[in-house]
Image: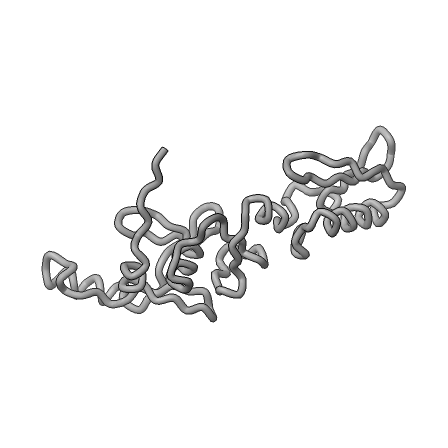
Length: 181
């Protein structure tokens, strides 16, 4: 399967301005030569020039349409700022998918990105990897590393189970923000 060619960095820089302090992308004014009519040129610049680019998708990412294709704003921001498209995944360090400030973005492998996830909305214990086991009437702790589930033990208190999980996160090099709410 072939990947579609990504837009040229200079092309991006001619279309968008990136503010690394706020993480926002703004449309730049466009030249009349890019439009069929003077009216469409004036209309586009009046509506969009110097205004924020993109909109939210249903996953909470900002998307920007370029040349008929949709791109995630954090990847476009990275490309404009660094002069190259990211080689792999980009991780929002604080977990906020709208926060595209450069200090909040890091290149990461899929494995690294998975080690910096927020607490799932269906979690009932309030601690990642800690569950109540009805049969044993104890707290059960586990951690998933490289697609393998590792049993950490059964505990009388949620605090002990959470401590075992926290220790395992350090051992397996999880990001300090993993499990945030």
